[in-house]
Amino acid sequence: MSYFVQFLLLAGISVLGCVKVSLQGSMSRRYVRCTQDGVWFNGMLFAAIACCMCLIFPLAKPDLSTVLHAAAAGVCVVLFQTCYALALASGPVSLTTLIVNFSVLLVAGFGMAMYGDRLYATQIAGIAALVVSMFLSVEKKENEKKRQGRWLLLVLLAMTGDSGIGFVQRMFSVTPGAATPHMDITFSAIMYVIASLLAFAFYFCNTRCGLRSKSSMGFDWHVLLYVAAIAAVLSVYQKGMMLSVANIEGTFLHPTHSGLMSLIMTAIGLLFFHDRLSSRQRWGVAFGILCVVLMNVRLGPAV
Image 1: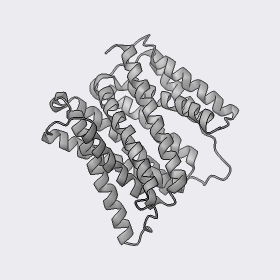
Image 2: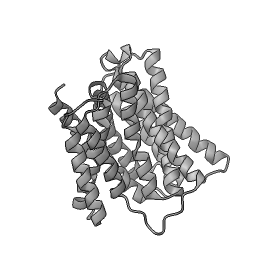
Image 3: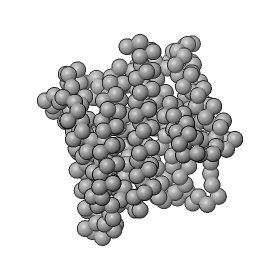
Image 4: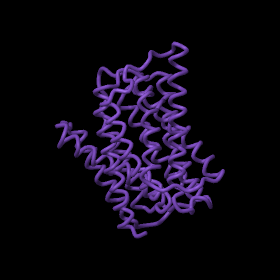
């Protein structure tokens, strides 16, 4: 796969990822009122994604390795989504987002350590630009809560879950079973089935034990429309991501994907939600553009 095709693939899944974020953000603003709402929605969403993938794409008969890798990824999905939501509710939003986003660097480092992915001098500069962009793109607000031990633990668990998804996807991509046609779809479908079961188990255990109130979201048909739309987008996104993981080095894949997502979401915010950027955030966008450019220029000594 040529560098140009790799970039087009990354651009495509980045656009899909931003559509997903926009839809989920719109849904959250309208219907999510508590943590249990988010858990209930994720349970429905994970189940819908699995159904969509089975309807849209052909499946392969799974082997034991595929099931085990998918189960591990499903646990990571729930860990990430649950801890991220709780961290956002209990601590500084900007710092939470910033720290969790560093998972892309962990996944890239994992590829270098375990699979010999190369990192060129220009790409090292691109990762540095991404880090600077992350810092500049978030601003600490005066009303944000002080960092606490529980919040920090939740943030680190969310980052671990997000990194774990990337780790497991990469490990699965080099197994013999991954070369079987359509096995990547089977892997993803099983992953989301397990994630859905775990999310609903978490929800009902919390509700039954009285730890959280029951979700008021229920099966509102507006919510179901959001679930269906996001699931359809994520089904195609997941197929593209698995294809990317199998064909693109992690040192190029994850930083470039993160940089493109940031740029596209900034454009969506400006064009459709009339967001206003501070001078600091404009510099963050500039460094994000620099990251994408440098990650696509593979020059200099390779690490």
